[in-house]
Amino acid sequence: DTLQLGMKELGQHIDLSAFAGDTIVQHFFLAIIGIIMTVIVQSSSAAVATTLIALSAGTINLSQAMALVIGQNIGTTVTAAIACIGSTIAAKKTAFVHVFFNIVTGIIVFLLIPVLTILMNKLTLIAAIE
Image 1: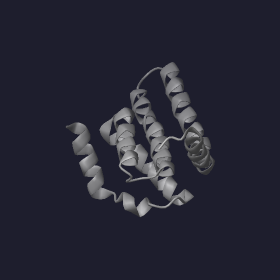
Image 2 (image 1 turned 180 degrees about the horizontal axis):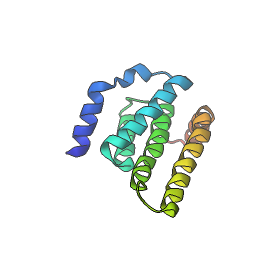
Image 3 (image 1 turned 90 degrees about the vertical axis):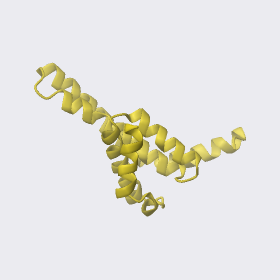
Image 4 (image 1 turned 135 degrees about the vertical axis):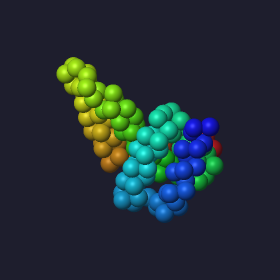
């Protein structure tokens, strides 16, 4: 119920059709939406599942799904950042590394979305997966 309510609320405020293209700006906004989705539902697994459903339904394409998942991965760090408030120095350092690692890897993969999309499309053709 919480997942449905969170996604319903998000859907009322955000029109994903505005990000239907494959430009870097549209992907950036989709990554931000992915972060928001994860923060709202407090579960990156649920947010990724929602993205996979949208992808399989044809609501979004592969590169858009990649951008959302990158944002959802970064969104998982919000919990760690909040949890470390008032904790030990070691816990704060661990949370910082978690946030830093996810943001840096997210940026790298974000920049590779066009290449990864082409690669996945070619692999799909080679494997004859429909």
